[in-house]
Length: 417
Image (cartoon, rainbow, N blue to C red; front, side):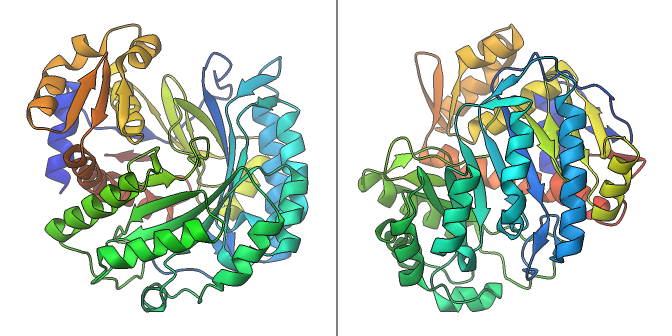
């Protein structure tokens, strides 16, 4: 699978050089010049570790969590104070882990960020189903949270058992959501589980929209090599059929499609921490994407706290982009929304998309992957599937390798992808 990603990378960057991350970072980050800047905060604590989850997390302990948040606040001040004025940003997302475990300190984190940033499009937070109760939701709203994403994975016990998840009390969750309103209530599901059918997914989506959600995300199961999951991967043909069927169903219902895997019942309901031109990440394993570089913090909670205590950023690795490499990052994550607007590309890079990738766009249209109208390239069902298929290769060839190393080494010397 790495051959596919390597050949694609070499063709699109017009270079045989790999993406190389070095154990270095800039003390001062040039985020002040960035447009459409987003913020992300990682809270790496969970009450229980799910064996299929690849993200940076640890079992929750209050003392360790408080120490971590103290360091997180310091990192925010170190980075935020680099810009003389308050910087306008699009949004703020809390991920994990289970950020709700730090609910008593969320307001403190948000107010510290607001000392340096003006958040214009809301604040989102990921939730475990067991945390969806009136008391928790009330506290989240009081802290400033405007959007929530609930990690359901599946409402069906056969898949909850496969994933090692608890049974979701749908009615209790819906009653709590009815009492405490948020502008977006998203529910996450996993597709391509063993023997999963269109009717299984359709049932989950119907239950979500009838029990408080106005947005759903249907993510593919990815078999990371460093997790202990024993879930069998679905074959390509079955996966494509399932993705096409559930996409067609959502479109027939009149739902709005905002990305490859997300649909909403209301046009303004959205939840995505991924589709940002630039973003700043705070916390262990958090990433920062700027115009000329991408950096990632250490995965070690202990080493993260230690570095911040030394008044140093907790950056583990940094890549400094060539222009073509940055274009690939831009196009790959913009395409996640199912659309690429050539005017956005030209605004960002100062050159036309057609000039840089005219042949590839022509080929994508000939293969039936995209349609184009007025400079906007929109994926077809076929294109969306193959984006997903390539994203799976990318994840296993690049992200799996990087995260696998960083879970073992707090500050690797170098990683080539």
